[in-house]
Length: 390
Ligand SMILES: *[C@@H]1O[C@H](CO)[C@@H](O)[C@H](O)[C@H]1NC(C)=O
Ligand SMILES: *[C@@H]1O[C@H](CO)[C@@H](O)[C@H](O)[C@H]1NC(C)=O
Image (cartoon, rainbow, N blue to C red; front, side, top):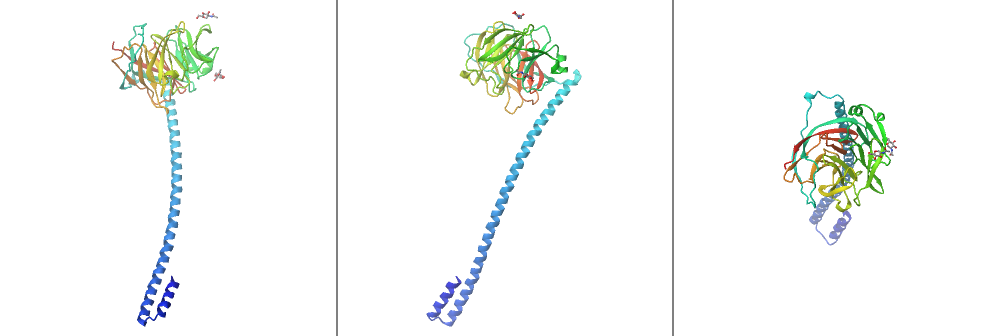
């Protein structure tokens, strides 16, 4: 620029400018020079600012990254702590049951909150009831932790028809050795090693077994799903039957090891299952304990999704739901084969505390209580019943 103005000055001088004009031109030149300097300064400053801005941006980005990392770490730690708190809570409950409070201060948890409507289902034929039983679950009276065997899955039960107090334990979802204890006290006090062992001929599958009238009815798989009837006294297989459903799928989405769940109630034996044909919902079948024949089958309106277990009381199936990250288990769908509770409303029953998920829940119709296996712990839920409105 300096060059072009000097050139201009010479040019102007050459065409004969007066002295005052010369002075004016010099003045303009000086002003322009000052402006030039300022522009150069701005230029320098703005490039410095942009460098600084870039540095600042980089710093912020890396800061954000480290904050995000810390947040992740905190979250992981929090989850860990939650799990540990749950464990401690459970240990405490267990210890409490080892040193029970005197009965007068025993608190009962009444857990009826809202209501769920029983969904009716069209039936082809009417179910012929065998008993006068009209009970339905009203609430959970209490929960007792009896033992901690440790395996996260399993099933334990006492025979509702048997003449002994024997307790049977089937640990895990695929073994062939049943533990037998003579009394509840032996069960709670002695370690597993001291139990009598009964070996069954084929390993079981899942936790959907039942002890009924001196027999163990258990599920196995040899090409197809089978129900084995095993005499617990003389330790022999009395009968076995292929389950007459095709393309079976897990009954409960949260307990995917169960393809058939055999349960007992006042009416006898039932099988809860699911097939590809009706993949959204749980099916129910009445099972003849003598012959293992299926007497009748129903499609229930209860979804498999988020179900973890189920039990039957007086011919009504109660499906227990949970969430993938275990929260409180609750009965959220009821299906009564007799329609006896069609105009009734069944309570939405919550199970106490925030344990993990139930891998089995076995209702004992004689004792009106549920034998449950909750992540290594063996619990009993005592139930409050009410009469169905007939
Ligand atoms: C059954 O469980 C025991 C103890 O956990 C184990 O040693 C054994 O191998 C299991 N048997 C089968 C058939 O899985
Ligand atoms: C075992 O008892 C059943 C009846 O429950 C009987 O049919 C069977 O013959 C008995 N088996 C042996 C080996 O005693």
